[in-house]
Image (tube, rainbow, N blue to C red; front, side, top):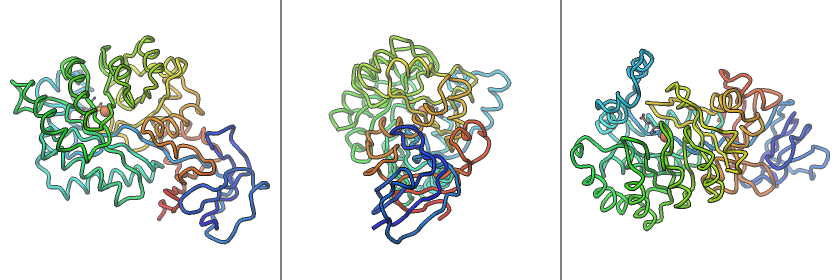
Length: 397
Ligand code: NIG
Ligand code: FE
């Protein structure tokens, strides 16, 4: 019995073949049971019907890289950067990530949850139905736990799927400023063992002046023993060994990759490590974009994500991300849409979504536009008309 039937679809993107005009999608028990031409649809039982009136329908966005749980903002640093200060020098002077750590540590659980909940709801309203949430603004056992708990709770209380990532190695916290080894010991000996049940993945910010490749290898090796696969902040601000480390370790993803080389691309493709690209950060920092075309052509599974965070990319929806990928990075609108849906899903090991075929989870966006190319074409407009998450209409609810 069909619970929900979307009819009158002007353009249906299934990610399993070309777009279909004049389509319907049928849903039962949260799962797509039919997605295709109206004329070929099996006879449908009762249930709710939504006439899409020739609008475009796409899979829900999968935002595979966010730092969603934080307090405060860094608009002051944004303004300083616009007058010429560098991200790295602000960070070296105790600003950057560490200023958000201070703000986040000082906020009680419920307030932290409410801040993150509001962001997640804005993401949902912009079409995101699955998101990855990193810790990384706690940098001590208690606060990292609180951030991961907020991430898990978002997935329990909101109509979004959440995967969590322990990013204890986002920066060395101030209390370990003169003892970075001591912090890595704390991470490997206490934080990972204590928090592995709350996380699906482990991440390390591999970057000059942050964590070295060998330090990351040590952290990821311990994380692996506790069942956490790596996702790696790699080659964001400078070239480095992060992408090759991700390939060597069989990471789920290497993220950012703004300075990745063709050798990095070949290594990632060969090891089946997803390349999660975050053009919002390059845009906000005024840095170079990842070589998306090269990574795609090398055979990488490319994903696009917001990187939502208060320092480098305060984006809460995929519209601008897709537009940057198309206008600045050389992906076609079709490729960018795939990377924002199926690519993100594959990077998170979620084979049941990011496509609209029988058996897929019914995470669906109806756009208030006749074709999905309107997303990059009209990046400043939230074109989402309806969101269906797990078969239920979530926007408007
Ligand atoms: O993905 N690169 C490291 N982490 C974030 C920035 C975090 C921050 O500045 O607060 C990023 O860009
Ligand atoms: Fe990030």
